[in-house]
Length: 214
Length: 214
DNA sequence: ATGCCTATGTAACGAACGATAAAGAATTCG
DNA sequence: CGAATTCTTTATCGTTCGTTACATAGGCAT
Image (cartoon, rainbow over all chains, first blue to last red; front, side, top):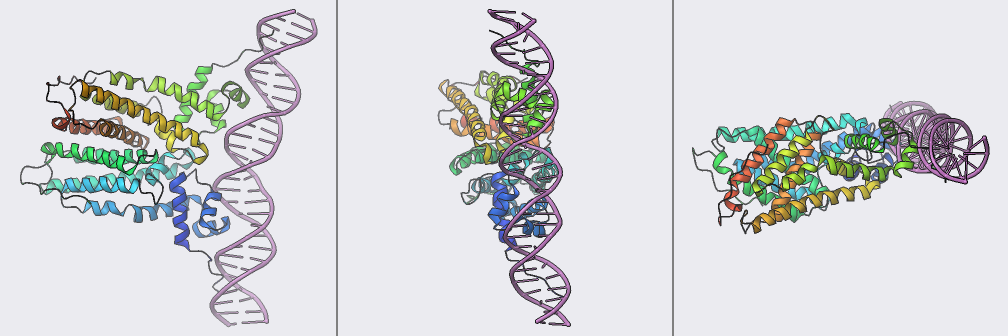
């Protein structure tokens, strides 16, 4: 049996270009013409390789999560709750304002860039954001179990609070805020977090001094 | 000279319906067909009365700012910086999760709901958000002059921090967060703010006790 | 070389987009 | 009344949307 004509473009490379376009223009704002132009292919190649626009977006989103948001997993591995939050916020500020790719977070930009015609995408992105928030909540609960966070602290509320700040920074970045401005927001948030420390940090054992996050 | 046939629909009423549609679907997500259906008129009436889609959006936006965001001005009038922030955040949570209109903030939804074809709209909304943030910064600077905020506090950073939280809550609301969940975020933010009080509150004279915000 | 299978380029599909031309209906002025 | 003016309705403009037929080109197996 014959194998057929081989594909003339690099799938992952094309996916990266598509991700860039979706990131910059949103799901509905990115037209097939925009995507094929950036990917250097014609529409039939796109549909043959990726299915349709929605499937292409999902694959680009997966690539985004795997590559551009990897720092979140690293942040979660920090030893103390305070340092987890510090690395998470500092890493977010760096990523959201990185000039190497569009500003803001794809899961935020994409979610709000949909009319009701793209409800599945909106739900997918809301789900991704909820997952990230839940992961942070579990990390804080673990910190609580470790005695790193006061037993009375509301981990769900704290996680949602941090997630809210990250999402707000995404809006700020999309609106043109510079990296320095985002870092100023992070400084303020961390100052507030540490000030809140008396309420949320356990007194059962002293917390280690927070290392600089970068 | 003849006066011509009188208009058969209420302009402000139609504008409110248009606002609802823009709010729910974003600027580009709202089609002329969506708008005319909700407004109960035909396209030529829309164009005759409002110019074009962009002009209609701007008029709806002005109505939004005048009506739905009036609580911001009231919050600014609170006596202390702490209470200004408290009323601002609590009022935002209430507004963003109000079931009487679409979730989230139009200036956030609309801004991120644009491809580059609608750059003027995006700039307009970014400008509105910057204005709100600047107003808060000036209010905090006034609090500083009044001795209500520590001389060393960075008013611009604090204002941007609060604006970031509000914008993040808008994303949360658009993603389906309930009013109670947003209020939990506000509680956390206010707890952090008051904990930060030792750093930002002036010691020159004691601050008045914060009244309940509602 | 010759089928066979798959990717590619061209070209186009129906649908929806924002925006209007044209004609009829409603009101005021002369 | 009729002329003038303005709104409303119907039908459509040209463009762009996401998607796909169709014919051609290019590797593999026989």
